[in-house]
Length: 627
Image 1 (cartoon, rainbow, N blue to C red):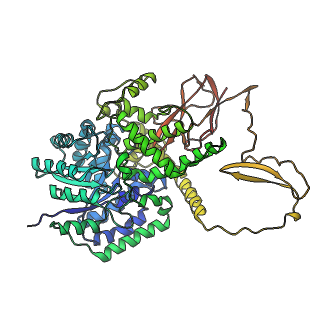
Image 2: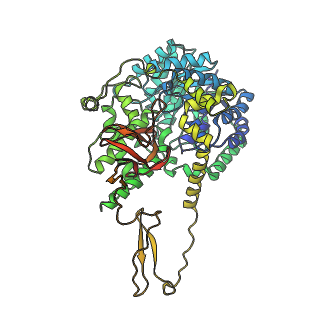
């Protein structure tokens, strides 16, 4: 009798691996029946990871989206599963234990059956609560092995990790090849070891197609005894995403495995609707290069799931960097130039950081640090001169135990920055915090929501939830989308008008992104430049504003991102009138999902805060004024 292998559709992860956003709830509801009609899926990934933050960012309630999206699959008997990040739950930073516990209860009540839990460091201490809380909440616990390739990440390492997680009580194991760099034979040996020791334990394989190993890896996983395989489908399969269900189906069927038939009429319907969603608005956030496979990813090991945001980050940083280079009459770079430099720097720094598996959030941390190093070196500054607080937490052990040893230079750098290494249980550093958020909900007269789901949303994503409630998130998203649509709209032809009919005027000239207000004369008439209206930069810089007869000292942004007065609720934001000391943190720049502390370079009194919380800023923007 042929052994059956079942499929799980990664409809959420398909989008996250390709771009920034996922479909709206009305779009998800529209496509769900057709996915069910395909008849080949026993599981569908419906939520988790960054999914809910994305809902909030475009002004949609993630709890409503989760319930309405999971319901059709619940009704059809198709299991739903979510992705969660252990200590970090479904965000990028550590989460209090009581908030983590509430999450599993809420997600089960919203219709999610399986919690796929992974720790980016593969620290079993971080996964222990995930396993416990998932089962207490009525969910199936699926603990993941975050796969990577290094001198410390061996078949024996992963086999032993699986043994520990099964002993802790997990129901299933996921072999999570988040970068797709796991060699096929390596993956097969791990799965075979697990199934030999625990034949009744369900094993699911998740792999990305970017580097090119995925089809061979899936076949090896199948031969080793895997039960479920994660797949995607056109037009969002392959590239930085996952193998297409049609190809996987054909390969496994030919290899002698039992696989469910695919209703091709329904497949084409899902394919067509997915393209419709891309054309609607999601395509504006998908970099075309993410549709390509790239074996350069083998060396860097960066995961497919972050490539959508990585290309956006590169574009933003490249624009800022090229402005800096142009001002100094230096050659500019292309995106490919910067990408290759980034890949090379990731390979260089990864071993020095103790080989953290390159999965969320640590893939972002390593990538961000590599990118900061590249940018600083290009600007003639020192490597390691800009390290975000989240990255320091990883380095000193607050996120868990690193798999490898830190390089001596990193240990010395930590000591030089006054950092103390931590060896305790990471969760102990983040005490219960729900009461603080309950108080905020009551003060704002906000509804706690069905099963306390709105309370969970605030506690899990405080800044994004507040922006959602105020309407700022939706307004910002709509403005950004309008800007992207305008940028891609066909250019209209310019109409030339004889200059002789005009009197002298001023005009704004854009030179490589820098705007200048200049005077213009026609014929022999000369004119002085008109006064700037404040909306464009002038050629001469203005002197610092005078405060009480003395010049104010300006605290400027070291990079582009979002201006944040605090990074969590434990901090008190500065305000005008406060006194700060040299070295004090005055604010943060949230860039590429990490918080970069901005410190005062001298003692002073806060006399001005130039940006509002959450505002976008560019490098060298004035943030705070001290006197």
